Length: 616
Image (cartoon, rainbow, N blue to C red; front, side, top):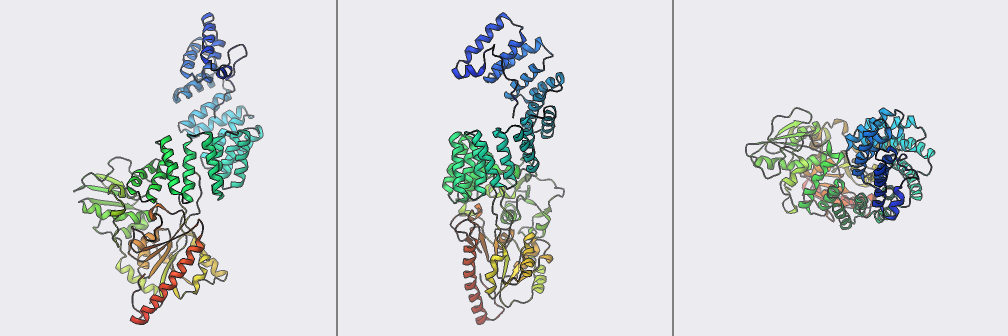
């Protein structure tokens, strides 16, 4: 926030506020010009004229006036300060910084100049220098609530909400009626997931400034995270009422509408974002996800490329934009580098395109994380598999895994769905068959926890996890359950068993699984995999193994809508929540289906013998 305490004229000169009210700004300019005709070198008149011009947003005129003033008085810190204000307003950032620094050189204790210089430095991404400038402003003027708030804003943007909150609190103690500080403190509370406290602070900011659109918008995010979806939408609508062209508010409203399953309304909101700001990356990305979810794949893949402009994806683009293969260029005798991005499941799902590149005559280098290397070596056509982080040899073209569907023009009718396209190593299968032993019952693999979906615009998600305790009724089924769970959630097994767990006994080989090739070999010993939306679900589908996906209500785009099957994996069945958070309903349906499958398996075993393969 810019400091404007100096921009105050005396009562002897025309004041911008008076002339703005009457709509006679040009008259004010003429008055100053008349005075200067009589006193062309009056530095006070020039200074007041510059202030008048800045306050009425006549910045180019202000530059002309200040150029005259600075030629008369080269030692006026105020003149160079005002010059910095005008240059900043015109986007002349480097010149503004030089002008503020000149003002500080003349007047080393010029707190306002330090503050405004910090604003410009922050605008051009010089965050450390901006923070230092704000701190100097505060040291020089410890009663400056503005400096406190600016310091807090940077700390919050640098993911330190706790320290930011302390600075917001200091700003509020210095100036209780400071709506921006209350809103900033609310944002800090939200970042710490203290949403009730955040709402109180947003309400205080709005009470101080009833037309505070940003406070209404961010308040909507906090309400959504408290599951008060209708109230959140009303808050976004209020922000939009105040500022109809508020693209962020439209975008956030679209996120909630999508989470509520109102996808057409969400798409309408995202379309509005695009009308307001065609370069709004979050809106364009969310719009693409909505298109993909609705099965409009051509538009979806095209818009999905907007992800590269989002900070959370910027690190995934490892090889820049040069020489990206678009699907149109010939690959005959050319080398193409394919590199993974995002999660393990994404890589497993879209590596199916690598053999299609080989079919086009390409030499393929496929770069993946270490835990995927052995599995990817099973792809047809024997592409060169490279561990991420190793030196990359020469290549002619490059593309990320998630851009391959667009390059191949994938629509619902031509999804490459033939499975298996990944294979478990035969020796690994023999080792795992020996380790797990002979099968006497229906053997089911289980994954109950996954990583949360990426947050968008500050929204938090429930993720894809189910408490293992919810599976306790499955103990009544005469099935053999094998844990395929990795990570922190694996500790739930030991915790529940220590508390008298009455659910199914889980065979746990987590310590023996070193990579996805091991998991693949273990899956081949199972009759069925039941999993939340994780890499294991994709792996089972890619192997052609029966897999039941436990799917949340606000489903991922790749599973589409109102489908119980997947065009990506013929062996997959989808069990989706009917309402948000209703895992009990999903598990009840899975339990009933598993009972039927168990009876069929038992009947087959009785008729054919114990060594028969079970069909899922």
